[in-house]
Each structure stands twice: as structure tokens, then as C-alpha cells.
Image 1 (tube, rainbow, N blue to C red):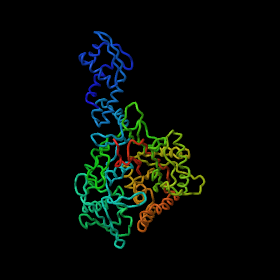
Image 2: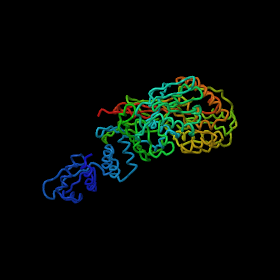
Image 3: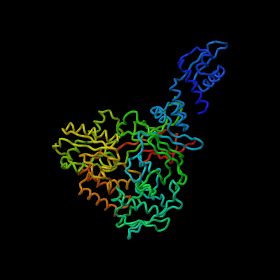
Image 4: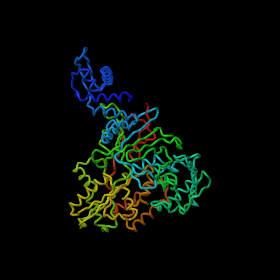
Length: 583
């Protein structure tokens, strides 16, 4: 937007007191007085406003003759329109000043101007999201969207895909000695972190040595005896038992390569991936393409994700990430992205997938519910009953019933039992996740009809996992989610082996049995067979009523082809590294 246009609006606002969208008969002298300028200058200003389409001006010849003035826009409409243009040009502070720091309006304008724009030869992607992101560190528990962002900011030694195929990242080759149980990884030359510091074999060895004793890593790395530096570009991991899939395990986001110091003093986020963090506040996250990235540099130069609170509570299984291409305000929105979201008509620019994972309920062993009570609860708390409640509560549902942890796994069958006596009161633990909270309310209502009073205890995501890690999640029923990453086989394996919420809900004997079965798989099976081996274990856990799957999210990515290279990822987000534009 031109500098003169931003000044011109000040004069328009002064004459808006005469009225808008009606014919006004007025002298040029009166217009000049309202603008606080000379008649000659006011005539120039009126012509400029007419040329940009703000008003119509039909002057009458002669002194004191009344001319016709027609203002087309209300002041709030015009300021919003100009602020929208400023936002699309990246002039966020000026836009805020223009709308008197109205944060609600600013959020709406951000949504309407999101998408991709090219400024000074660089491609900028702007999105909005409904909540701030937690600290983007690989070694702390993270929600689904944060793990997507970890993939953008960090790299691992290797990459594992949804089928268990391992490919290079920071390591270009690796070897496994089946007799001595040691793995060697050979690093690419001249690797660096975002702050310019060198990524070497020594850094990798020190990082994994620290992670071995880090909370939450002990089970996964219990078989790792030591790490050693063979040379500056080769690191060795000595195991004490067979693990032919170790190269896939360390492809998980939790094993992203970061400076060792960041484990202890994470003041500034330093990563190793395609994007580096420029700003992370409660208002926005801004990423910048990292020019020294080991692979192909991201096609997108910058990504800004603004935190915009929803105008109303999210619908069940609906999380919206807006990406509307900036257009003239009279045009309809032509591009947006919806994760697990809204009923969108299918067209050529839509991609839909059922998530790998589910919402689920765990029976906490601390409740000491007998097997028949757990079985009866599973029988009355069906996904169909919960869905019926949600529909009656007028919740929009973008999910399908889950019968196992993954949508492709078989549905366990159980023999129905007769009504069983239930406790007078049950407690439910849940973290702040709209779909889980909706499920907890539905379960509470269903159990109330069965004569059971329920108390729902709501935690933040961090507190929920901290309490589980300390074995202090004492509620009878625990609602949580299983979200798998792009490394699907090892992601599912890891969740079953070391998720603190799952294992704190199991009896010590059951937890020990599960760990033993998983370690047997790790000893004998290649990564490509992990999911096939895990399926009967998950099915047995459901049949024994240790847990109850509830829903699989339906993830939808919708756009109209303005952006090139947009594809949906395992997390439901667009593949932002590959976005490009012909402009």
C-alpha cells in the first residue's frame, strides 16, 4: 500500500461525519473545514479518494455552489480494508495502530489475509492457529502440532517413513554389527546448527549420553551401553542386546539433533533443520528458512503462525488452521486449511486422511476395577453412544469410530455380558483438548444414566504428563490420545513401550508383560514388520479391557491450487518446506 494512501484515510475519516452511502450536497469550503486544510488541497484530496474508489465527487462550478459527495465506506470498513492490505505486506505494527490495537479485529484480519505472498522476491507463508505453541524442544512431551514443528526445526541422524524404510538425514550411511550389537553412523561434512556451531560426532555422542539418563528415555535406551567417537564424522552406539531397528528408533522427533546445552538452558531455540526460529511468543511463531540446511533449502522463505483465539469453542475433532489467500475484501475466501476440520465440499484442491492413532480411554489400575466392571463399562461406553450424545449436543463431528489403536488394525470381538454393579462414583482425568473434553462430558452423562456420578479433573498437557511420569494420575478413567508421527512403525512402538500415561494406568505386572513383548519384537523384527507385530499386542490390551479406543480424527487439507506443492502430512499440517508459487 502506498504511503499516500495511509495518510489519505485520515482525511476520509474527518469527512465521514457527514454520513456514508448517501448523497450529500455540500460546499467545497465545508469539506475543507472538516479536513482542516485549504480548499485547493481539499479538492486534490477528493480527487485522489475518488481515484482509489472510496467516494464519488461531482463538483459544481461557482462560489458557494453545493456539490454532490457520496462516501462509499463506513470508517470501520475502510480502516479494516487498509489494515488488511498492510498485513498482507507484512506491516503488522502499522496495521495494529490503524485499528487502534483492536486485537479481535486484528485476529480476524490475519485469518482473512493468510496464505502465501511474495515480497521483495521472497515467499512468505502466513497462517493462524487457535492456541500458542509450547516450547519447541524435542526432549519434552509435545502435542501433535508441536511435533510437526519439531520436524521443521530439527533433523535426526536418519529418517523413517510410514512403512519403516530408513533413509539418510544428517548421517549419510550407517552399519550394524549383528554379532557385537554396535551401530556406526557416518555424518555428512560441514554440518552446523542454526547458531553456526558445528555438528560433529562428539556432539552426537554427548547428546545421546545425556538422553540415556533423561526422564522418559530410560526404557528406550536401556540397551544402549555407550556412545563413542570413532572420528569427527563417525559415532558408534554400543548396545547390549540385538536391535536391528535402532536406526529407525532414533529417527523419532524425540531424537532430534540439538546442542547438548539446550537440554539444560534452553534460552534460545537452536535447531538443525530446514527452518530456524526467529520469534516464538504468545502471539506468533516465526520461522526462517535455514540457508545451511544439509538438504535442499526450503522453497518457502518465511512462515509466520499467528495465535488467534477462536470466536467460539471448537467443535468435536475440529481444529482449524486458516490459510486464506489475501484478496480484495469483496471476494470470497479462496484458500484455507482445516485440520480435523469442517465439512468441506470435495473438489480438486482437497486432501483427506484418517489419522494414524486415536482418542482413547484407559482404565487406571489404581481404581482396582474388576475385569467384569471394566468389561461392562466398555460395553456401555461405546463410540456409538458417545457420538449420539455429541450429536444431541449439536457438536459437529469430523471423526470415525475407533475399534483399535490404528484404523487399519482389526476390530476385537468380545462376548456381551449382563449388567454389572458399578461404583457409586468415578473420576475422569483429561488434558485440555477440545475433543477429549467433549468425550469426557459425554462419558459423564452416559454414566450418570447408569447411576454413577462422575467428576472430571482437567489438566494442562504438561501437568497431565508430569503427574503420569510421577505415577500420580490417580483418576479411575484417563482420557488421552495416541498421535503417530511420520515414522509410523517406531512411533507406535515407542508409545507402547514408554508412554508414561499408558504405563501408569497398567498394573506393574501388565506393564512388565507389555515391555517384554515389545523388546522381543525389537530383538527379532525389522522395522518393516513392526506394525504387523504390534497389532495383536494392541488387540489383546483392548480385549483385556486395559484400554478402550474411541475415535479416529478425519484430517482435511483444503486449498484451491493457488499454492504449489501443498500436501497433507501425518500431523494434518501442510508440507511447508515444499510450498511454492508461480508469482
